[in-house]
Amino acid sequence: SMVGVSRCPGGWIFGRLTCLLCSWILMPLVVCCGDSNTGSTVRCRHKFPWRLADLLPCAFQVLPCGRSGTTAGDGFPYAAQPVFLEALRSDASFVVLSLGTNDASRKTDPIVFELGLLSIIARVKTSLPAAMLLIVSPLGCRRGLVELRSAAKKAAQRHGAHFVSPPLTADDFVKDRIHLAPRGARVVAECLMRAMVVEQAGTQFARGGSVILRRRDVRTIEYDTASEANGGTCLRRPRDAVSENVGSTGEPLVGVSLAPVQARLPSPQHQSSMAECKGTRSRQRSLSRDRGEDFGREFTRLRRLSSCCHAECTSSCD
Image (cartoon, rainbow, N blue to C red; front, side, top):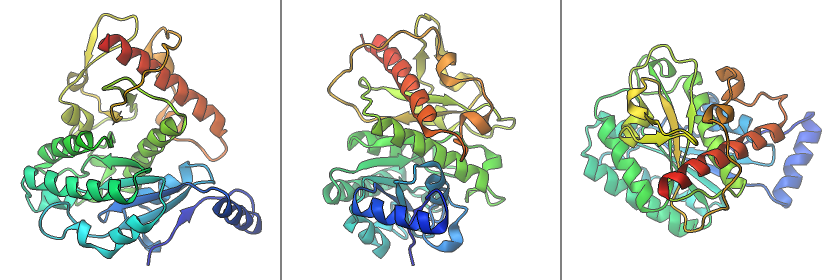
């Protein structure tokens, strides 16, 4: 049976009352759809939906709707599972879709995978038109994932969904190189949290904009998820005429590719460099919000980061 994951401060009684009050007034629901890396039972507390619930404010509720072994293409399609139908019937504000690991194991054709993913996205858009849809890049270290990641990004762009590419390495998976270790689940949850917070802030990006965050604790790199997904896209820093090729740095990046938008924001204040927005703290401080850290500081830092990236995208588009 599926369980809802929520985090409330204080004791058990106070937390219970807070949850009831939020459910009566307004509690944004996050539905996580996917395979075994998503999970749906109490035994899956090491999966990324539980980590996401720890990072989000207590007003959020996370509902894992995963099914082990499911695929987007042929084999064991996730679209035919009852857990997916239950997710469509929910009043979710955010929908996270993470598929492709089992498709790579089955050597599914990228075209078949993309068509299956497009069908799932279309059903989500029809049932939950107001929900923010986040497509997670296919997870794993198996061969064939490069083509599936490219197909997943195309499907997300076609339907205007948000594409999230976590900076994972071989150390973020268990020995089978398929399932996420607790460390990898934390990285995925952090990327999703940042994409959701930026959206909640009401920040609109110029066409083709993206949020780029660096990961500073990587020692062994097996593959570069963002580089594969973006094809080595050249980024240009504000007030810097030197282009930086993502695929040639040798350091994995996380790109939260946002859906194209029609409106543009007024140009924000210029930043001296992107390094000021990214921060210089270690991963334990820069890529995670500790339980005792004020959420307002994290929110403000993300607004500064998004403004800096918006200025970068505006200058490149103009």
